[in-house]
Length: 346
Length: 112
Image (cartoon, rainbow over the protein chains, first blue to last red):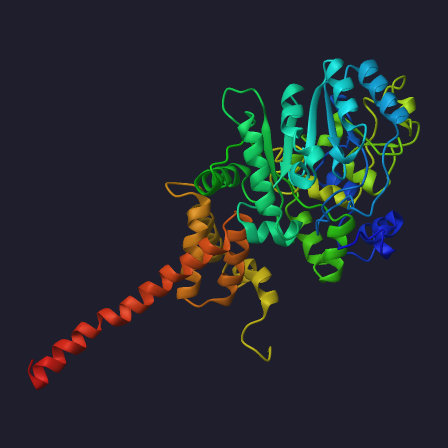
């Protein structure tokens, strides 16, 4: 499977995605209208605790629902200069967590250097690891040891606890490889009680439906992965699929777009608005552009007027209290129990 | 009138049954909501039971709704199919257990 970008699909253009999402003919309220109807103010940031850094779009997998449109055919990656700008911003703002994502962030040649620089600053590092990268090439086999050395929190996608549903979303053989990688992480202590090495899994629905209770899903994943494979992990994050990039293309192509958007809007939960992740983070693109969140990055919706647009200008800027750029995609983070990079928010 | 008895779009209109009798409709939905709340059984267990019963009563709306619900609650295809087999086993068993009556009668008639 190729990325939308490689096939020059119309929805590889972010303006086209925004056009589909904000289409006035869609008989659904705009996100700001829905906030108003619930007497909620516009979204405003209240702290800067997390810098989420997208190191590049290259990935060894091409998942059907990827909102980054990542894959082996994507070559974009962050320069070391921009990484230095990220470090400067972390220092200037006392940012506590750097959350590294991609693509497969480990494929970036400066990945290990960047992790070392972040941990040297005393920053907690999270890596969004797709698991199969650990087995993809001999040079990645020691990643579990590397993560352990730097006390990296490993956050890994595993859409389901059975092979068939996982492989349908992430590619043939992915479940089996993921299980092997999880065993390698467990072997060095990841997910093992008392080790202090955190291994969290990310569940996202395999289709156009919302995730169920995170607590129940976590219990089921723990039961099944232990019984079937002897695997342990810490937490399960249940994340809602946002209608962006490949998942948006899937919804449009299968004529489920309106129904899915209606489902998100009907599940709007005013309580979830308080915990949305954009309130305490900045997302950095491989080219140094900055955004309120990873999803705004993918839709190329920059910080609101008067705010810096590049990471190089973040260190000296005050971005707390800024108005957050929103759109209909934001219904994905406010539906049901809420959704963030750390799972449910309610 | 529709040309078929069942229209998938009608599932979303389930709530409209209060239109002709609000009091009883409201009472039903209050009861329905309470039944499916987390209790001695988890919401997930209740959803699997509902899926099995949907097949027993052969209600297409219910099958649609509880296939969605069980998947949303993280049930696997294997778990869902086992639930349906439980329903099928009870239905089949209910027929077969009556064959004892048939056997009794047959033996009475022809000896045995």
